[in-house]
Amino acid sequence: MKKFCVVTNSYKDKQLKTAYAISHYIYTHGGTCTIIDNVDEDTGDFKVLSVSEVPKETECVISIGGDGTLLHAAKDLNDLDAVFVGVNKGTLGFLAEISLDNIDSALDKLLNNQFHIESRMMLQGDVKREDKVVYSSVVLNDIVIHRGDELAITDYDVLVNGDILGTYQADGIILSTPTGSTAYNLSAGGPVARPDSHMIMLTPICPHSLGNRSIIFSRNDKIEVRIGQCRTPNEERRKVAFDGDGIFNIISGDVIDICEAEKATKIAKIDEGSFLQAIKDKLN
Image (cartoon, one colour):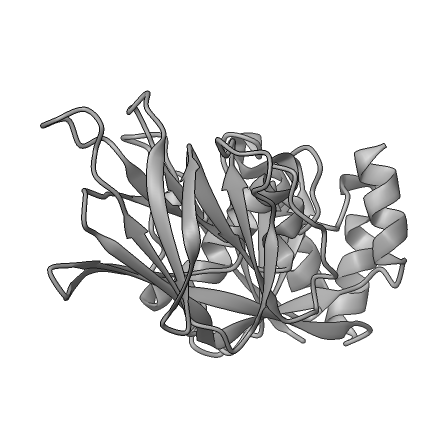
């Protein structure tokens, strides 16, 4: 590969030093590189990236920051026919696998096509209100339905392929991909899955029952979550978050449809190390 785009988090990559260093290395080794700062200067939040900002011939998007930077780049730039890889300046870094100590060797492998590609499934989420779609998004990690600022738990009716699974009384529900299994899903007690597998995981958040546990569904299943009545009249504060971003306010009676997205994210794998070893190293 010779045509790159670097998406960096300027809060973690101060003065874009790492981004410029990567760009310089790529140029001196016969490649081209575009740099985009993923932080909105006015709000300090992640900004939505536009495919129009990136050259159409881009083959690889390199994110600099934590897993969140890569997640947002993958979601916003998924229409590109490019592979994604992350430089970790965050904490755990399950997605951003390149460390600051091995950037040059990793770039050499990318430039010389010495890597393999993992196809990571994504989820499509649609928020429906009175049978009309009012918000949609595609995620690589998870869709989190949460009580938000509402202190009381909420009832969530869950249907799978049109059949009622049950009602969860909980703070919320996480719908996760295998890639997202090591994120909020793991913290909430959900299972860890190989990131290149294909399944959908449902994990309740602080369920008000001893019997509520995570459930693993097929990639072909269609999941529907119906939002129960608000327990505090006239104070609808519940929310749904798509990969921790794209936060949308939901109200009683809303329905959230979740299924496998048509597109997948291509992740460049440079390190051939075991996924189980990575889990052991990062979580211990």
